[in-house]
Each structure stands twice: as structure tokens, then as C-alpha cells.
Image (spheres, protein in one colour):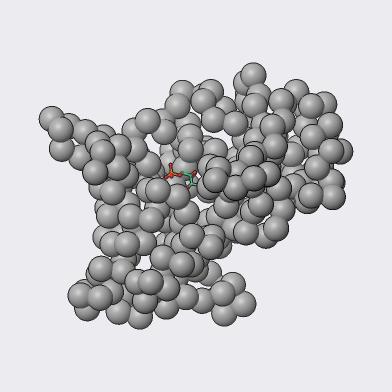
Length: 236
Ligand code: 5RP
């Protein structure tokens, strides 16, 4: 395992340890969140945890949870989620996030919004001073509306790029059958405003700016070569 993977694993495991028997748990997407799902599966298998129900944020999370025999529920069956665990692409000091590196931000935001506790797991490379400094803002878009959405994004000052598949010809298609536009902004002085403006574009679905949602971030770093996790709580 690479040092980065060690950190991701440490953060994921630390979050999965917070899960208690009987909880409804949001299962995140990406290379960090899958460690949380994997550790949940181990705890269930060993009998340390009982009566867990998972709500997956993506096809990736669904497949892994099924493999690990984590019982799944849909949003028709529950009203709230006790704890949602997910990764992020950028974390600002006020715990505003950019998400969607795995093209799953639409379901991820729905599940985070239903969670009493939305806990984010990252390695320290995800911490930024200003949102948007390294990662573009992903916007899910109806294929029918790709061109007008891209034009509207340009009018907001963003530079849109259609996300292309890897080992798949053509664009990335989301779990909902839509396309994904990654938007580079020179700066994002007001993330909440930009989140709203992007949402107001007809044909644009959810975007990857998460404001005021994360209750805490578990940040893994290497201290003397050993992965160590610290907790950063949202400023009150
Ligand atoms: C998926 C996400 C991921 O949580 C985010 O991209 C972080 O992924 P990773 O842990 O692989 O770096 O938002 O849509």
C-alpha cells in the first residue's frame, strides 16, 4: 500500500469505528470512503456491530456493500441517516468542500443532507486555504442541456470541460445517466453563492460545492511514517 493509501485507509477506518449498532449509515464513494465501507463490513462480520443499514451514494458503494453483506436500504425506507461517511476532493478551513471526483456528488449531497452527522474522511493533501485552488467544481448536467449549461457556466466566469472516461471511449456517464462538466474558476470568493448560481442553471443538476454540511473532517497524515488521524470540527 502506498503512503497515500495508508492515510486514506486510516481515515476511513477511524470513521467506521464511530458507527454503532442500529445505525443507518451513508456509504460514501471514492478511494478513501471505500476503506470505511470495508471496515464496516469487517465489524459486521466479526459480530462487533449489529443491525446496520447502509445507504449507498453510488454504484461503487452498492457493489462493495453487497460483497461485504452490509444490508442496504433506499431513501423510500428511511427518513434520516445517523452518520454519513464520505471523502472529498478539497476541504477549506471552514469545512466547505468540493466533491465529485468520482462523479457521485448528486447522491452524495442528498445523503449528506439527510445525515445527523456528515463525517468527511481525507488525507492531508485535500486541505486547501481557498476552495477551488486545486480542484474544479463538478456539475452534473442533463445530456440534452450540455451546450446551454456550458454557456451559462462561462457567463458565471467558469471554464467548463466535459469529463471524459478512462478506459471508456467518450464522456463519463453518471450513475443517473447524465454527463459531468468540471468547471475551473479563477477564484471562488463566495462558495455558497456559486453553489446556488450553478443550481439555478436550467439543465444543471447538483454541483460539487458542499457548504455547511460537514460536521467534522477526519484528516490523516503521516507522523514519523505512521498514519495518524486528527479530527477537525466545523467552527460553530
Ligand atoms: C466522489 C467523491 C469522492 O469522495 C472524492 O472524489 C474523494 O475521492 P478519493 O477519496 O478517491 O480521493 O466526491 O464523487
